[in-house]
Image (cartoon, rainbow, N blue to C red):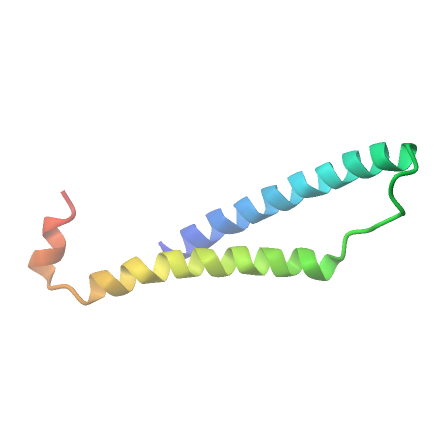
Length: 82
């Protein structure tokens, strides 16, 4: 279950990065046509940090409910299933 949540959040991070990169390309092209912006670039270290934060959020969102469930008795935990 934890791996599934991390994969889903990592995929969300990748899709967000791809959308951001597409926005960067489109905006950079339009702004540079008018001479408004100097040339700017994407730092791969920052993109990797964003994906790492995305994976960390996925891990935390998987661990917190698991820790809470591990502290419950079996009978109490089964009440929340149905």
